[in-house]
Image (tube, rainbow, N blue to C red; front, side, top):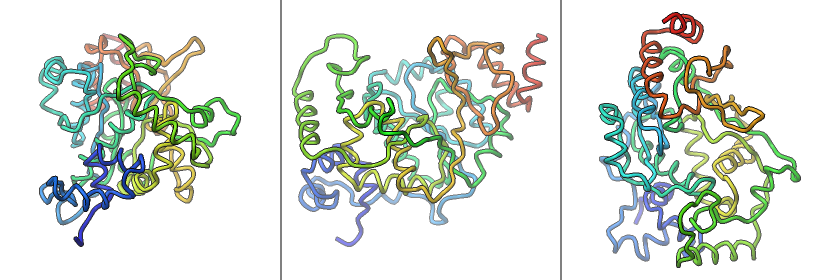
Amino acid sequence: MNEFDEIWYLLANPEVRRAVMRGEFPTGRDHYEIHGQAEGRQPTRPADRRPAAAGPQAGRVACLVMAYSAPRVLAAASRVYRAMGWDVLVHLDAKVPLSRYANDMAGGAGRCEFIAQRNEVFWGGMSQLEATFSLLNRALGGDYDRFVLITDDTFPVRTPDEIAAAIALPVDRLSFTALRPDHEFARRYQDFALYDHRATNPRGGGMRVIDEEFFRLFDEMKALRAVGKKKLAVHWGFAYWALTRATVDDILGVCLRDANLWQSFRFSRQPDELMIQSVAGNFLSDRPFEPCPVLMEFPPTGGPKLYADLDSLPEAIPPGQVFARKFPDTAWAFCDVLADRLIAGEGPGTLRRNIGRE
């Protein structure tokens, strides 16, 4: 076998990826040669799911959406994304019935593609990153040269022209900062935690049943404790970003070729705010990063702040931030009006003034 795409194989086959990261196979290629070929798995991305021969197209953007509880907000936001010519790819948490979510979106579901590779997402667990990688697996088969990761309760707060201009710049937008070893967020990495199971997730809810999956994960964590976590400088930042294709390729190359790195973050707390950020800070430190494009506010009373009407939005939105999170799904009517005005070309200043008069 001459042609084999290690990164694609591990992205497309999450159960194989987990086996490789557990140390059951040295690489994805080893799995393919021992089992995968006989099982009918593809060694490379199928031709009908590859970028066109011309390669990535400048300005082509894939909007990657992590969806769970705000279908009507996403329905309104997707109108703005499509006005910019973006494709909207959606990972819907496997706990949520697709038919119900699409029905709640009404006509908005037709503006989105719901990817087939779905994960059950546990708050603060590695499953959040695995859902992100499922989105990237689908998007990397297209001719996109930019990828934007947001949630379904995120909404644009600038006009399509302003957003397109900001995202089209050849820069990566990912906020992260290096942490002191004694910082409380660094402890999220240093400590061992099992968030990808209902029995031990702090927001698991319902019956906390200890099953075979729990014992399997627990044994993996014990094995990691025996060898220790990967030594690196821990970086923290918001989980949302806008990245170029080259940077996405580099991040995936680091994450999927280092089993100790993967397992170290798998058994940490909130790795969606640590893993990609730490990879960027440790392995991609030679390239510039601009701040995250998503505005999130955390009042002293606890957050994040909810944006339910015009008055809740800040008077001035920082430069470079073109989205805001969180918009509750009950604010769908406000989001519809906001989408209309943004598509009409009204920026933040005129938006507040004109809507305020009505």
